[in-house]
View 1 (cartoon, rainbow, N blue to C red):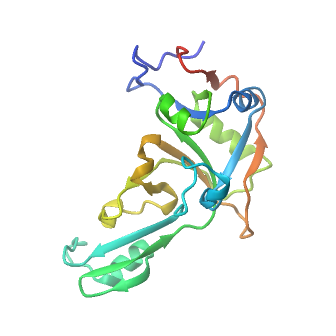
View 2 (tube, rainbow, N blue to C red; view 1 turned 60 degrees about the horizontal axis):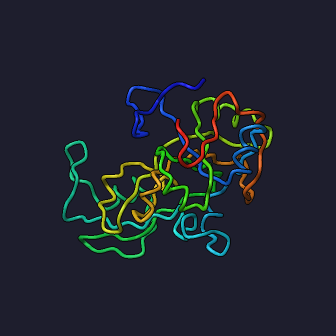
Length: 228
């Protein structure tokens, strides 16, 4: 019996261990539950529009276009920062600069990605043409299984929410959020979280299928209309 983490409206009860959700087709949900078979994507793969639907494809994955407006400086330790301070802080590749504005982009290296949602919302499933969902009751255990997998030779594993932004946002408010955790606001309904895994090797990487063993102790399959 899994713990009760939701109220009668399927809203997560604050204070309980946070569950995560993966929306997928039922045959893949069963393969994940019984064999731990999951597809690990890559950042660059998500740019390939010809192979993904509109809910997945984003040609700007890992590329964050920015504007830094110098006429509204943010004071840094009592000193007014220079343009160079912003370039050093954010790693901006400049495409335009003036006395009042710097425009450019921040690029992320390719990495492995496993996408999740923190919302139980069947509209998200519909966006991904999924007819089933997987509740991941213990995300820490799933990450530990990924770390132990012989199929993933990665530097580290990081879990975090996506920050959704508009083109005209102030990049300084993002702090040091990596581009791999930033997406356009048009994707915000997905309430996405990501497990990011940079590879140890500098060689090109491709999506891969890994098997982690049975996940029945930490996951449950659900269908539209089923009770949690």
